[in-house]
Length: 124
Image (tube, rainbow, N blue to C red; front, side, top):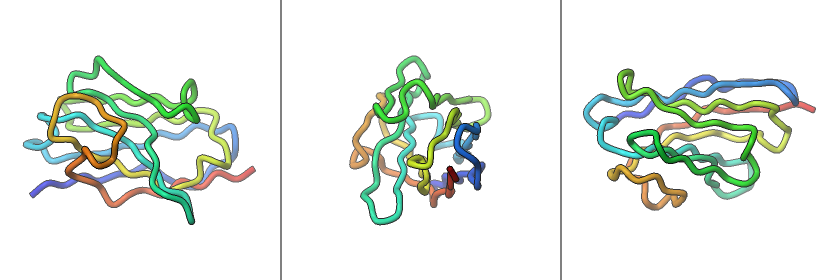
């Protein structure tokens, strides 16, 4: 059974930093690229960041580039999203996803497994 569990969300103020974590079951995590996506109220789910299995390749949405950093620790089966200088427009539910492929991807349809999400709310 594949399980992805996000944590670290909460209510923060604009300009603050936040770190999201996503813990995965060992068998699945060791074989795939990971991604973070988010969905704001009334909007479609959108790509935030992705990292290859080795960690050598990362991609970011333009809206978060320079502020967010994705990383992973394969020894702990965990992927992180470090969020700096958050803005009110970052308010959303953040989901991590696992791809059955080692190559990083921006496309949500290429991910097979999803967590249930962790909410982030940024006040101005």
